Image 1 (cartoon, rainbow over the protein chains, first blue to last red):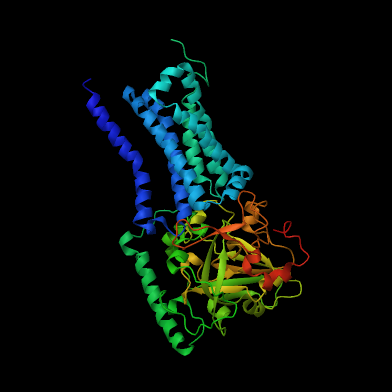
Image 2 (cartoon, rainbow over the protein chains, first blue to last red):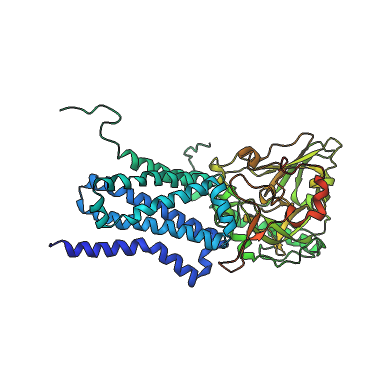
Length: 202
Length: 320
């Protein structure tokens, strides 16, 4: 177990890095409201939303990166990154409910039921719950092969997240389409080799 | 697109753009100041006043709301002006490239006096008024803004629209060098807006040239922009260079971009939702309270008593 110590240190470092966006927003709220701009509710909703999608993409990038670099240890960070994705999506939802919507429960139900982009976003959060719950080692072991199947839900979640983003912008699709392109790229990587052409036999 | 060729002029021989502009500004401000002395109380070109200087002789108006205005900081840093980028902070950051002087407006169509007018001629002999208006964006946020301007009707009548002028169309400057946001096809440039002539002639409708008693900042649509406070913000076209009187309803930019989402009238209406979000309530900018509740949106943005008549008998759900 010679490599155990650097791994823990790296994990702590990654944890701190992943928490930085949250800490920054917290600092802004408590100490520097000016950083939140003229429309703090909108700013916080957008920031937590962007970080949600980024962490979903970062988590999805772990496997391809491991294959490309051959660094097997990368997989040990995937659970933490995935849980951060769940953390930021939950934060996104809480900001929307408690700050943007102002605890207006009647409109919460109306928004989720009547506005398709909201329905999709809410659904993505719901689908993340079972993944977060079963992310621990015990559940992994207990579920065996079914675990992998269940966690493929993240492909659906990523798709919903991209649609949610595309659907909510007023006109400028550039930013959501960049995220979507990265997502599509990460999904293409998961296709079995030779999906587009016959494998070259040696 | 302009493809630049290498020229024989050495870079050292070319006057730096910044210096050229400074010189130009220096000359113009000298001319402007002498005019300022001659005509107190009237509108003057931006060059006559440092951007931070107060406009002189601004009259108060009974049309102003008693509500507390949003801060100058918020009004000038949170803008939708896609000509400078689609982020709210882009206009404040990039609008300095817009040259608002000299500025002229081309008038055409169903009017007895078409032509190209200098801004100074359009504004001459008009008394500036402060109009503190509620401002409601189609994105469901709102401000209270102390504009300075003159009634739009005063300007339009100068061009003597004929009886065929049923509508009036306005166009924003198109110059991707000055307005870098136009390099991307986010909207169908140039930005065009239009109104029924009776809407444009309504006493609440103004041509704004100032904000908080000062010359209008570039990011707010300098040197002249519309303000019809009962309509969603996007109708209030900025940095206007063309006015055209027409018999037919003009094609307007946001209506072309999303006909189901942005109507020609675009009157503030809490009962007609945007297809993707509710218009029933609005986020008030600058409350300073992170947990502030949204505020109920009022029909015609609270100007129902003054403007409802314009739309009597019309189905506002159909003509949104």
